[in-house]
Image 1 (cartoon, one colour):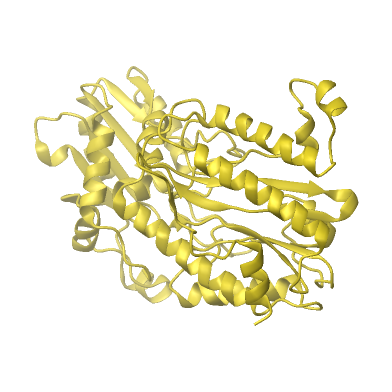
Image 2 (spheres, helix red, strand yellow):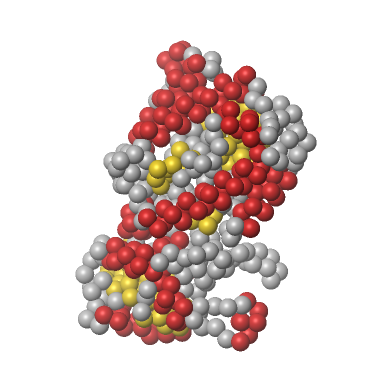
Length: 429
């Protein structure tokens, strides 16, 4: 791996936290993701299941973690199964984890080859009353493709039909939602790499530059700093496409007078930054662009100050909408009649502010966590208000990554230029 991994104590603590929520006489299983095919003999780059990463740090395919809540033999309370390598695999695919390497990284003492799984799992399952099955239960998950966890669930229910079954996902969503100090530091590195990429772009952008050229500048900076690359598909949208939330074609030339909205960030060690900045292609904001930019900036600042332990994000997102409502009134985009006649499910501000302000951030860009439970200290969220005016070909979104803390929040992107005057200065140096 290119990155410096977390200490094994982090993964040991994560597994201990998970085990606290298990019922007695139960066993839990976590499977790695598949290597997904494309066509012919092609495959996509491997992306590890983030629950497996959280509990073990093992970033390798065909990995299984088994956790037993309270087994008489301590050696069988946690077992890590990994793919056994050979000379042919080494030649074609490169190095795979040895047992000693997997043990040193994960802190799991009992590391076995995958071929031993059926035998050992049968011993644990038959001695257990309950089996915890993992699944992707993210509220925005696209579940058309069957995963290894899904296939395992079918196999397990057929082989052990008389067991009780429970879900691991609610436990994982809870324990992953608040980050350890080392996880926050990993996120900080991803944000710092993103900062360097953005500052590079400020000196590069000018009328006539193509969106895909900007994308290339970002990826060059990210990879040279030991990032795998983009945390998500980059959005580099100039002109009217700045009003398209997930514009990813990045195919046009940037024109004089346009705003360039860039929602792009680096990952580091599987932890993801998530940044959005909006800059003038020619290095100078117009009067109208400044008005809209400053309105979004004010909403972002007020929203950040509203975040604290105990906040419920579903309520918070609605409250920020009311802050945005005031700014849209000042900009003349809505009026009191619009507000008076608005439908409860479609407030007037939603015509120009069409998404929520915050989501969880971590091993997944849209990380797991509950929008309906109070957030805890150590939770990391985005703050990303935006105003989108298609009739003016103008979209402004500003986004930072915030660690919610008891005594004042920590902005992991505090060093990334945001002030309007600073951006203009850096673009014109």
